Image (cartoon, rainbow, N blue to C red; front, side, top):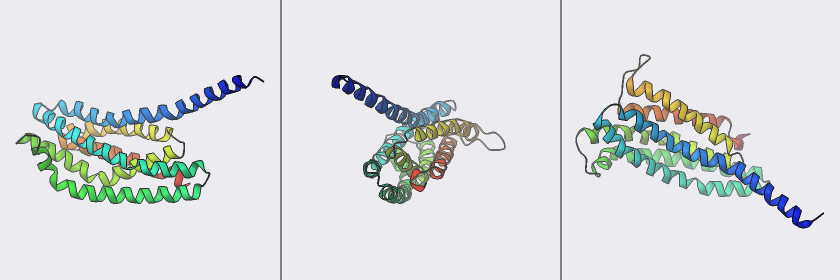
Length: 223
């Protein structure tokens, strides 16, 4: 058989596998952005002040969230290395250690940032109701870091183990839940009062908590 033909087949197969792994990762990253996008659209219906608050608080939360996500990449490298070496025991140990680190980082970060929410908003030159509304949003998100941080590390565990679809599926579920929960908490319904901008953060935390719980149940390091 022509060796050049074998090479072409190998390259084609590698490309196919890379695309199969990469597409869910790209979509999952877009889904993370989708949560903030939905929050902004729904809060915008409340008026100019809430919209101004979310326009500032949203990018702040996204910047911090992106920073925390980057911390998980070290765990991804180590887990993937041991998975590639077919050393599942060490991979599971590293994944468990990374999860504990995520919980601690989320707890410490939330406790540190929570009392600074109003100062952070004020640093952007706004005042009055915009600061108050934006701080309410940030405070809930900061408290939720102890839940959302482990969720991000768990996504990395799945990706490092070669399963990029589960984080994508959990992201789709989280976005759907965020839309439903936001509608209830922002505008009120089913016996729940309308919380306005604060309700957007409440809906987001509920959605991300559900996503984290699902990932814990299906965590490949625990199975």
